[in-house]
Length: 437
Image (cartoon, rainbow, N blue to C red; front, side):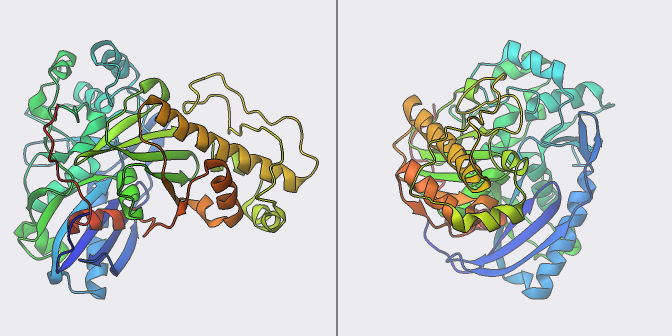
């Protein structure tokens, strides 16, 4: 953990539907917060796009709203997080050459095949949803007669604030093909027909990136010269928000899907299971995500019914039903089986037992996920922080503790913007003391 500093620190969280800003003091106490809605993505089949200009406008509104709560001239430093794998092209002046392809855009099928042919198997840029696949698609389908840069969502916003191009961070650049072990853009990228000169200079999250320009200050109300620190992705920011900091600390996101992240002293890359690692100083954030989770529950129960049945659940007595809840066919982690179907037999005798069996099933998948990570080389799980809507169900938390057999830890926050503010404040240890490679 870094030492606390005087001043105020701003975390900006750019999502698909909103821009959130949080200001904290040097000890991590909340000072101000607000959210601005963003226009919805334009969706057409596999195409999912947003206008980068809408992100900027959302940020401007967010900062002006924060300025009505607290004076922005007290902000010492800020950092930005964005959705992982949301990519755009811009010219050397930072002007977008078209819309951004969002994290869930899936049009770059041929580009993903090219990457599979040329990239190492453990590269974080594998798959149609990777930032690199989208960057290749844009490079091949955008009319650019001049030099261009490839940027992630957070990169472009940070560049708008400091007026310098192009820069990024280890975490956002992972899905663009950046090598987090060797800390470089690997030469194989150029075999795809795109120069490494198109990619940003990559910095450690939390390290100094630049200062707020006079133009950005005039638009936002920030003070010129305010320090801009390198940011991260939204999921890493949500991890940092919890306060997890020791090897063996896990964070489970109980949302639409079930996502696990674990702090490790060594990286782990297992593409077969969708496991990859983000660099955090001398530690690594190992992550994997199951298709199970809230989406599977939603097919059988409304939130209102879950709330009404929860008091009758018996957290300490297992139902004996070995369910594997999935919203459809296919699983990626901890089982890698595109043909796996939901296992929901035998039928439960009533709705209460049915709900408990589903909650137990998701908790077993969580336990299997952490066990798989350990089998492949991560440290033992020592404790789990929980984020997402499922964290509000106390009985589910008790079921999970029984099956995981580790302490359930209380997060400082579950807000990604809070984690990014902690990054700006130096409350997250991202210093690298060991050589790369």
